Image 1 (cartoon, rainbow, N blue to C red):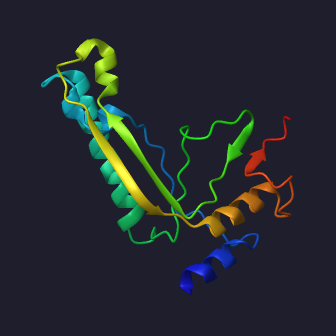
Image 2 (image 1 turned 90 degrees about the horizontal axis):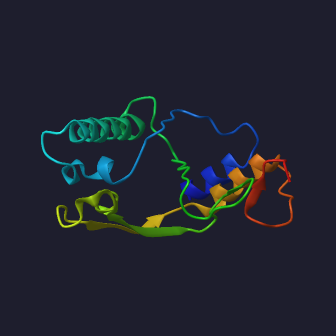
Length: 154
């Protein structure tokens, strides 16, 4: 269908166009500013950060001119490799985050109520991820069959 055609199109060099980009801090306080004491400067800053993150999400996903076919998420979490970048080639993703551990680690244990955020069954496009991996490798698809891309320092 349409999704498969897009995956094939993205595999061609020069076919991908970057429409929008954002860098967002993350963590417990960005997800839940109420973990911080009321009327405090850190809570006010966390509320501003959360509002800015929501604005960026609206910009990236709802704005005219920035209606992406795909969203690429780059994160320092997950598989950690020295001098390489991992590209996940699966078709489904899931995970959980325990929100509130930052506050507990700052001596606020018992003063906050940690909660768990879950994401299950997130659709991923493994073929498109493979095309991205190959493009980052130089388009030849070579490189030993792994799912990591060397930065050339190895």
